[in-house]
Length: 225
Image (cartoon, rainbow, N blue to C red; front, top):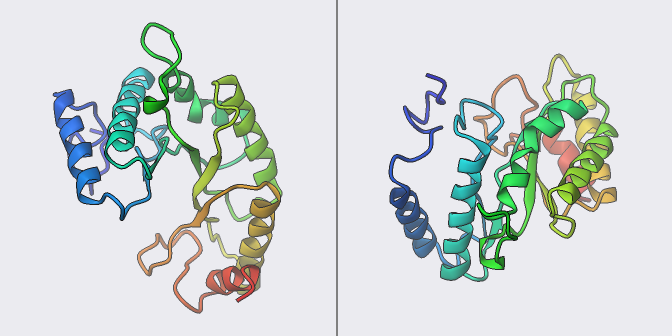
């Protein structure tokens, strides 16, 4: 079994009954209407611990979720599942987001109606300690090119998780990683970016964002606080 052990058996698989998925999405959106403003429909589907189905199956889940969210809470945004990328390798990048093609068309090949389309694409970025923040520019350009090829030219791209593997980085190096990465986030005009994670529960191999930590200081500095 490849399912994430903290989520349980079957968590990475296609539902046995598609109606269970519809009911789940409907329940969540109805409950949190006006509270949750954006729904990211899936986590890192290019990792087997989180998705073992096909691109076409994933696309169906996204389309149905989008239709329900848009009908139930028109003010909420629907965000595509976020593939994780650990470096700017073009082959890995393509493998990570090739499901975008399936997500953009109906089964017969016709364009999707607006009600079934996502409002934003997303990705996660976890580079190693040696990676320079400027490599985010290379990665984002690759992703935006893929988005255009998949028919999402005008769809914004969000960075919904980002952090660097620590690997012995000094306190000042961690601080500068955050400051310089945020500089590129602004220059690349990424509408949203979220550093993972503002808790004391983040994996120890990545930079920690507990209040007062070097990474947290870098975030405060880059935000002018």
